[in-house]
Amino acid sequence: MKKIVFGLQKGGVGKTTTTICTAAGLTRLGKRVLLVDCDPQANLTSSCLIDPNALQYNAHDLFTKESKIKAADAIIPTEWGFDLIPSSISLASAEVELVSAFQREQILTEKYRGLEELGYDYVLTDSPPSLGLLTINAIAASDVVVMPVQCQLLAIMGLQAFIDVVELVQKINPNLRIAGVLLTMYDPRTAISKEVEQNVRKILGDLVFEARIGSFTALSSIPRRGPIQFWEPKHPASLQYDAFVEELIKRV
Image 1: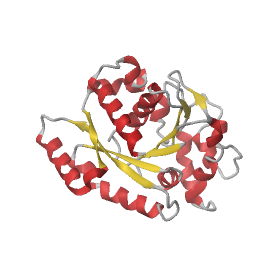
Image 2: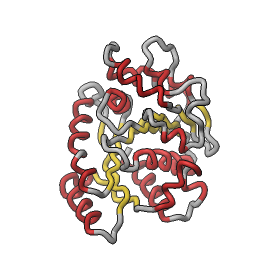
Image 3: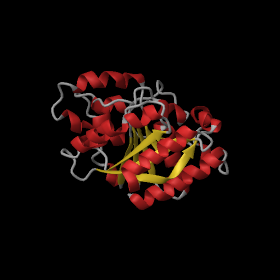
Image 4: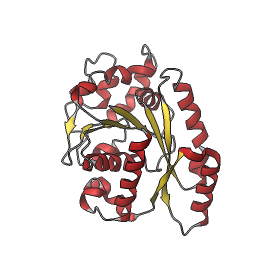
């Protein structure tokens, strides 16, 4: 079972879209996948067409000190064949609750115990757009980090800061490694997209995935329709995410 976290402290770079489309791509290849929504905004949960407020358990229960809930207890199915541990706005309070917790950076790692027995091939975690304790927990509980980076200058400015955090978390989890950077919202017609790609590839070399995700308006329909590969499998965005999934499998 491979545990992959999608993270970057900047919002709007495509983390949630990439997480659910990666799950769709892996599921279509016959893999058993679990999604974990660690963002209080619950965008991943909503994109799975699930009401964050209508559930017995969610990710907040995993971070509550008094809770005996394990990750396996909070799993719900989705209509596309992959499973989900949902989130809700209540998760926002976990950041404060974690401050005084024992081994606060490893709460999620402990809660993930037992998932191996459920037969998942991949656990994909969507982290919040921050460098707080929720994000650190999501990174520490994973084997591999994928960083979606929007093809804008402001996005790449925060890339090194996130890499620095990953390197710090490697002291807690020595097996953690970076799978790579995925360029998102790439528009080959603009000079800025080409400049960002050139700079990122120059700095990070082979850490940058060959696959790129374009800037498609169709992706904005995912929150109300689910992963694009299931409702428009021949769309360029679907094909690009499928190509990314194939590359990701080889890297992890």
